[in-house]
Image 1: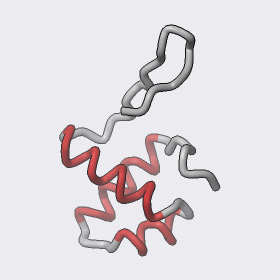
Image 2: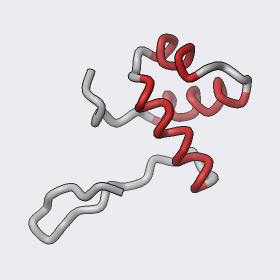
Image 3: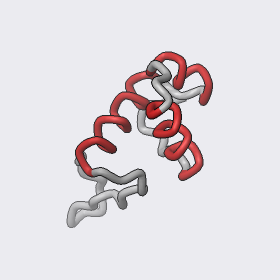
Image 4: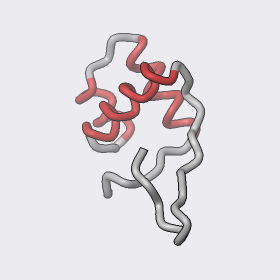
Length: 68
């Protein structure tokens, strides 16, 4: 499973729920079968943005995805 795989809304909500129940990043990763960096990155974004909504990806003029 690649790091760039987008999580569906259910998995987003589940990651946040597990995090709020004090589950470790490792436990969440094993439970949802996603990588630990993906779980960690999503929790960090959730803390910064304050929302679990999936953010649309930004595109460049050429139609390539931008990071961020």
